[in-house]
Image (cartoon, rainbow, N blue to C red; front, top):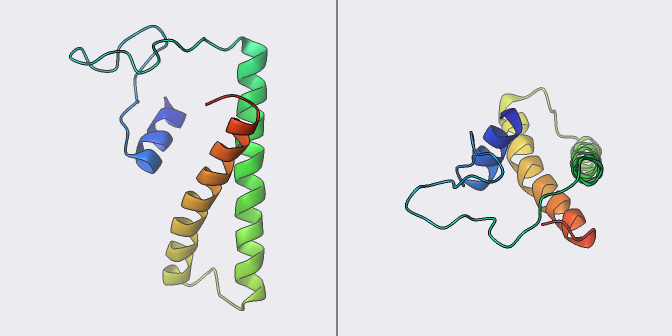
Length: 103
């Protein structure tokens, strides 16, 4: 559920509390209709790829900030970093997931 809340905050789509095989909203069609559930091994692989990609992208952005002389201890710079990192890292992770065939 913690990852669902993270996804909520990044995507704006409410998924917290959702479980496979259930509908998100009683008035709408199941968003995952037609998609297959991942096996535990596939899920672990997908999660590993996703979080490794996020980590790699965030480290890359932090390195760029430091090279540009930005002080990450400054609250304004830190907030800007968090916004940029959350957006760019999430996009990179989604692209990596698409490359593996998981969406």
